Length: 622
Image (cartoon, rainbow, N blue to C red):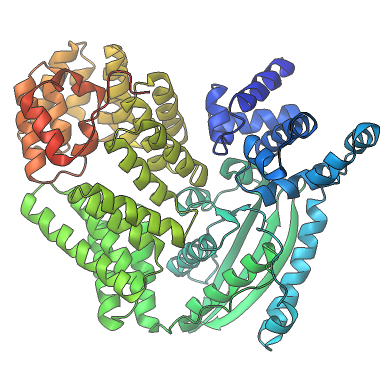
């Protein structure tokens, strides 16, 4: 019944009232539903978005605290799960028509009356004003009008607004400039993410809706976004026309602002800078903005090559030939314009992708060395690139095992770009290797809230649940990934480990059979279907993996687990040592898997753990 559903959801929110990171994803998990299922159900039952439902419960509880306790408004804000007192005050006023302080003064009947006749929120009117202001500022900023009219000091922190930038469309006649459209999308996400007051959906999730035919409200619900930004790019010769519009999808779809930008293609970076700056400052109602950053001009040919390489990276077609094509584009770009930092950053990311695709140690070393040089060059040229700090954090953590430096770099990335989901994943990795699993899961949940439809992010969270022994949550999380992305093999692989730990060997073989079908490893899939025992199935796969045959995983850390599955601890340790020698990037996390609990007292295993600098989980780490 709807009442039972609502009561259970409300109780879950109350049980986590002071946890400001308890949001839609966490509530959906508590309810035993996927995020998408929960979003649809809460909307159908209450007529509210999930975020609004949670916020209203928190605000209702604040009333009780105001009436009962002698707390300040800031203290109450934190007690009901708001991370920003100013945002709490704003939401309270929108719902009840007065500030928490005013309500406290209005004792007795007058206060009760004020609450019973609460003022309805007026998001549409507010956004119309935003749209009008935006047009005004775009016209006047070029005439130096900004400083004289907007010099009032800021009164409070701006409201955090969840915004998603949808992939821009390529409307060129030959449909051959998709790299420019995708590049503009990518740069807008980066620019908007730098600005306080925004929670920007990460590019991994936003890209899911490339060429989507879903209605805006559905997309916004999936992404947990208050506003959607979409646009198109039309190019002809050396000119470019960009159409962009801002959409409020709730309660009814409303296009609150639109504009056109006409520029030569070589000016695209300045278009991105001006566009994102104006949109951000107007939505936030900034009262004392900084002047837009003057970006250096980039050679048109270099920029074109960069966008082609970047597109290959963004589409995540992680195949060796595609990544090598991307490296070629990006290397050509920096050869033409050696001062263009974003090209070096993407080059480093592509080298890291290649590193994960090969198991020849000499080849790995080349890719890793190139990645280090490229990311260092990117930071030398521009020390404000949040993604560069995140990429370097992954390098020093996973390859050098310098965990404290990894943490510092992730925190530096978040200083530059607070909504950088990858930086939160890096912090989740840090807390995992340090044995702080509450924080590890918290950071992974934060990354999920920022990037809710990225299968890699969702799988990281599932892996964390597996490591701490929360097997049902791990199964649910992996199943959510597979439901959304049926061909995401990493989730299938991880789910098999969870089933194995639960003793469900038949389910392990079943999901791994699907994985082998996906990998087109016909011989293994057919053998798994013969009904052979679990141990025989593992031995059959090991035979191909140890010979280095095509379509078999040769990752040393993963292969070590096969030895554990056939009760060969010494074989496991031997392969873990090989993984250690080649600085296998998965090794520090694999050692924390429950699969390896039986090795915790082995001196050789303990030495590996100590040398890498990780803290092993207990059998019940939480």
